[in-house]
Length: 208
Picture (tube, one colour):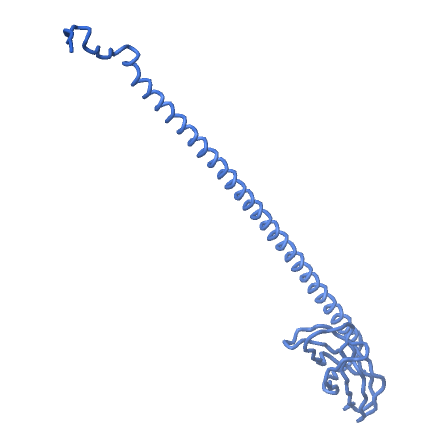
């Protein structure tokens, strides 16, 4: 077999490093960096979207809570107003009841004090137990015994009171001609309905 002499052309030529080969690694790095930036941008956008959604959710909850607080405050204000109105109404009712009681006492007292020359006769009058009349109002039976030396007429003031002695109403009762040593009965009636424990007392009485 003939051997040909080795020449320079016989050796394989090593690959040349071209400008394109030198630039290849940086290009790959740039592509990887760009890909990383894109991924980060996508992740960031997702996170921002999530934050936006969360913000909207929190905003909605806060808005609902504020609305509930406002409604609650309004309800409390309405309740306070209603209580104030109720208290005002109750105060007016109490004042009205007291005014009526005062007027009744004044009228009954005037009926007694209007008798000229009358003599004190409280010792001649006794009051029984308070009951409720057919009209639903308190009433009390009175017994008058003439301890004088002649016949007398009587005018009696009866006060209706509560358990503590506060005057609720009053009435004036007139009894005609009770003979010496004799007794006569009459009934004092309250002018209005009275609740709770009601008692009666002879506040004043005169004979003439």
